[in-house]
Image (tube, rainbow, N blue to C red; front, side, top):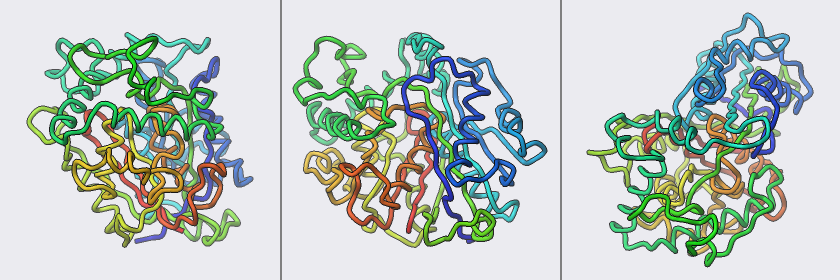
Length: 399
């Protein structure tokens, strides 16, 4: 397979983009990524942009046309992709596939989400309704906040199946808040929580659905943000004036989709996720044992546990224990979600999959903040999901 490299990564701070409009966000992402390596956007041959709420919250379609408005990009093959919360990862895979097919030598993957208004405020009920569109209609009835409700059910099932406690999963959130403290891009970098706070039902921390175990601190954030990657073949790197040995290689990637309806399938052991992860490992010629850095899609704490199992770093049902034993810490066996994860770094839906890959690239290049930097990492993995563990995008990065 044609070697593909990450030539540049750029992201906004996650949290609130305030008065930035969608056209301004897209242009900032494109120019920011190109600016990291001091090139003009016109060097880009192909591009893909991912977002999820652009129609429903931003009243904006045809995002590819916004990318093409950046001088130098008009008339080039650009597309917009949507795969729920895996839209960012899907954009990266789309660009990588085009480069591998010889449709260009330099590509750009952009992801963004604008979920708050110009004052930084959010309409929680509207956002809950909008995100609910990415579930099966039959599973929305009677649910005020569809996705927290669906994952509260997943959390209940995980606890019952594996003898795990709410406190065990809350420890994942506590670890991620501690990581976010050192990430200057993280939404919750100024907030710290203890395990007792994560468990206490008081203040903002409450059970999201009566009778189900999911609490506020188990949930990811409502976030604005953008992220962009420049990808290149070896010939593309030469055009950019970069050396392969100074870049991170996108050594393997795969995407798989399970049925949208959660009922009737094993969401604790999602077939598509395991398939995509296995194929990404095979493409890269590595195994889970080689991975020492990872970013996984912890939209809720239970996914921090399940995601660790999908990676192959923990046996089925032992994902939470991996975190409790300190093996996911920055100095652990595999530094997982050192960015703070979706729970504390933030979850700008369309940008999330791009940001996972970008952060892992920083880790492999030794560019992560010192308290979060893993020791001499050589292989990293990402696991990005969309919907009720439906769409899965997995990547492997190497140096």
